[in-house]
Image 1 (cartoon, rainbow, N blue to C red):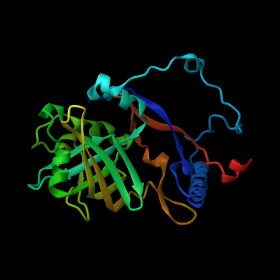
Image 2: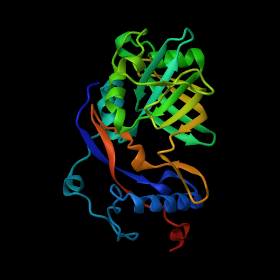
Image 3: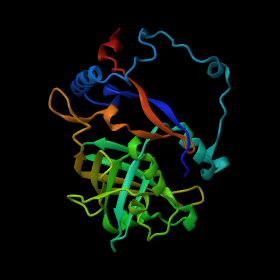
Image 4: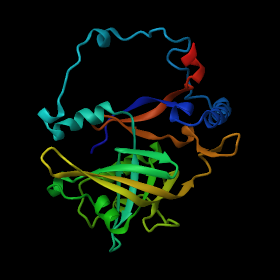
Length: 282
């Protein structure tokens, strides 16, 4: 897809990530220390004076507007695409490197992407290729063959090169070479890493789930890959007070995917802690 205007997106961090209270507090303290040293992207929460059960102001257009009911089975799955990618935002981007059993390398970005931590896994949805009459994309075909891949976190400084890899190229095209990116050997899997990326995850296939559309045909594969090795550039690696490694948001400069060809930067962020359990008894 072609590049489009990059817009800002706000990201809530710390306890909102689902960490335990202790881990969230540790993360928060480490973040505050880094914030004092480099405060340019950190702001305040939208309504710092709010207390439950007070209501917060809703924009008049939303409060007075009518909801439009859309039945996906009526419009069809393909027409749900622009709705999904514009509503489920911002989405992180997995920059996935794979190798076929014959050694042909492939590199492509995917924004149907999330993760979990115990065991550390990534979850990626790889849609079928419309330009190949619904056949599998090279990424999925390679994962099926070798059961290995790497995920490289996408940052602003090499975004245009990464975007250049997502064309509908022939199977024998090496997107990493085509885009001018640099291959870095992995330690535990065959697919190379992207040197320009600040965070790499070497992965082995743990589960996969085929999904079928309303017409009964395969439409995508949900891939669960277990991370067998992390690589974090020292310039973005930070430590919590308890000694755990995390990635500095400001240093990482992550890019997210929004609707259409629009991308987002994490340029205004804030902390918002989870409520204490005591609130249920008040």
